[in-house]
Image (cartoon, rainbow, N blue to C red; front, side, top):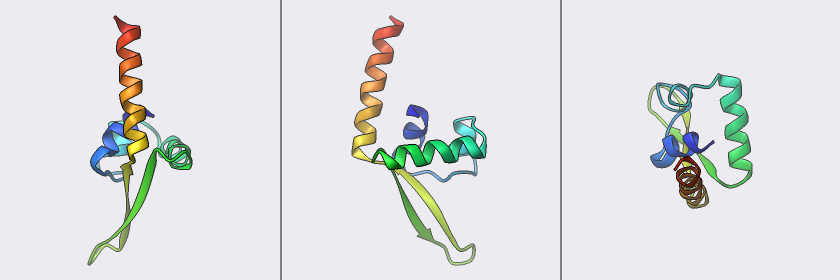
Length: 81
């Protein structure tokens, strides 16, 4: 989950070497995590319109999600040392 939030920090699409491939998840797994994170207010989706290809979703980490990543990284650093 932290990796998804890191990748989506400045906005990311599900595919095209963004969320799906960076996080090494199946499409079904990624959808489950995206829904989980969005339901908890850690991630938001934005619909962007393009001229020729139609609409697509962009996922972006919320401030609450960024706080989660900071806490997660601190806890991880504490446990690894």
